[in-house]
Image 1 (cartoon, rainbow, N blue to C red):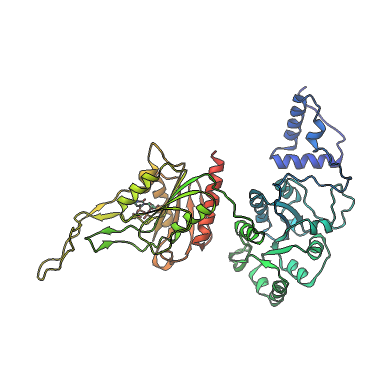
Image 2 (image 1 turned 30 degrees about the vertical axis):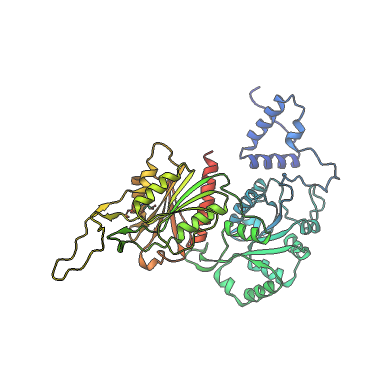
Length: 473
Ligand code: CTP
């Protein structure tokens, strides 16, 4: 039998098949083929179950098949509003599910202009809710239950219109009715044009919402979807929203690197000229230390090899304090094997060949001392090019003051590492010693991160590392 045509499938079955296919990333035809193959192999006894999970013993119309969330999982009801940022809310669903948080989702009518119920339900593993009056639907559970069966309602993107309705107590669709009917906490992730955000009406509504105890994440400053527009109004990134949710729900930050060994180098090195003088650079160690702290918070077993710094070492990490590049290399090699090595230290490229054993003295009338420099070992390249015990992921930084992209590309190739995080360390960037950083990651592709605090850079990096390790298992 080369092909098979099935006629007169009812609409509900077609919808279920489309949903299954979207969920497993197959075409409907492929999905049907898979179902038939599995059913045939199992003697056909479970054919019906493969198309639809067995009905729960509860009444028709009362049950929703929900994928198993961990027992005691926190529940979030995500309301996706109608804005261009709605696509980021799909990533938010993924981020919340990764964290073991159970998610239900309402799409407003306007949101359906930006994302489809099918794409959201494929990520959720269950249907999304769209209609207030869908009482005849097979799966309807009613807006009161939606409002009640949740620990937190997150509105993302929260448009100016949704904020106005919420501030005024309107209830003219499913989203606003649920928001009015809930006693759960509410978190808004506003997203709108900067002029709409600055408008007096929006600011008045915002003040009312804050007075009503509603929590906010963002909006952030940055590029708008409209060409050439910039300002305050961008929706917070999914990871920021996820961490605001974790805080509101008092969920332990996700242990993304549980069981992994991570090595981080941080700070400058000091290369002695004599026992009291040295060559150094302006690195504060803030970025490397933030990465070590974030890795430890994500459950990793962290060794931090630190040059001389004034910042406090993070708790819960093994710290090896070193002074020179050669000591740093030795400490790094002793910490192997590790899964991931991140080289954030600003290692001095040269040391003084003829460093004095005693303090160099001024001698009246004599020539000033000449310092002869020799090259230090390149710690990153040494580790990245190891045949034995090479970490699975070797990550370097490219500290540049000019030609950032070209230099970063060249460093990625010459050092043999897997990723390079390029940053502008020119004096006007304020990165060296400052609290913020703007990173461009270069691996097989290039990814520009928005300007953010060094702690946020660290958190983003840890998530990317966890994704990469998961993908390469
Ligand atoms: N690095 C290292 N050992 C060195 C020099 C640099 O491990 N002796 C690492 C840094 O920790 C960083 C990367 O190499 O991850 C790039 O450092 P950077 O200072 O940007 O570049 P250099 O290799 O020193 O080259 P240049 O100073 O010429 O830009």
